[in-house]
Image 1 (cartoon, rainbow, N blue to C red):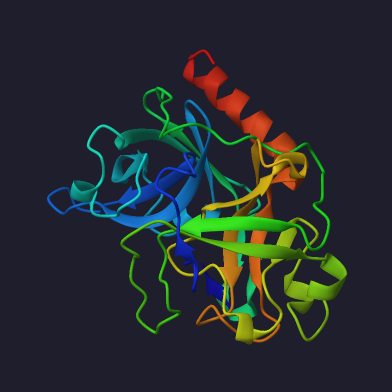
Image 2 (cartoon, rainbow, N blue to C red):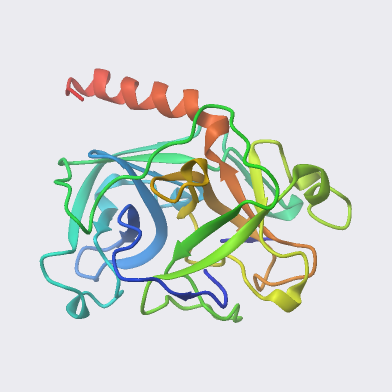
Length: 271
């Protein structure tokens, strides 16, 4: 199992996913920031992402910045007025987060990031909707994974130069929890999506972690909801009967609501 790029996706239309975040980290001040994970803007002060992005020494808010309005990873190639980066003053990782690599076990892979200042919405920067609590999208629903993760599933992954996207159909839990698939690693609080055969060669991968799995609300295409958070997949990212796995956002609606309110109350700020 590999903690999660978009493999063999296509370049996204610039700024067509305006909630997409490039979460960038630096451990030592003189060094430049580097893209580490993706995220979703869900509120003018909040980013939704994966808990595993903050393992080890990556749990200090001061080490991070959240960049919105990006398309090219090299900022000099983007429209200067489109991109904005924000400092972080809070990271809330799910208290039940589990990652045991030797057991291929990962659970409650969800986190919230609080921005030090509010985002001013623009054409290039706007939030995505959250799904209704408990909703489970039907099997076969085509949703989109987006990110700057490695594009080839290589042994030494590298960040993509441009934001990529790929359509991945949802696979029902009963199928994806079979022994030939993800077996007991898969939990009801996860979404399994992608292609059962490696011939179709599309998946999320390293560098996409924490990023959005976006579905059209009500199938209309007029509004979008973030139904999943890129969590894990097969090593090398493409493997027979090992589709991408996402944290199911609708399983954590209460957790999201409670922790946003708790943070604001304890910090003395107002929503």
